Image 1: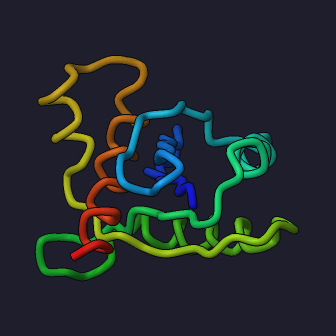
Image 2: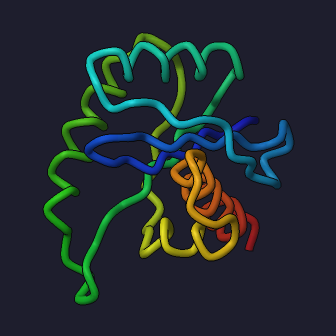
Length: 128
């Protein structure tokens, strides 16, 4: 089964896709967070035959939801409205954009790299 990782942001949504075995995560793309985003993501889910979507859960240092988490929860409801079969799971994410920037430098695919970090964390935890 293939997985889609999502790093949700107010301006951009980073996307990552796993290999068919669900072992490795790869940066896929960055989508502008506007009225077209859900349709683009739905096409990726269909085209890549995604069976599970993993969304970064945004908490602060105390483990409490960050203000962006309310937006993420609304986004999840939109994802659930897509008429395709896939499950949705959360993966705690903490400073993944900072981690991605340390690895790749600041570039236009930074959010996709952050999504890959989120997804890889989920995949690694799943097999333990």
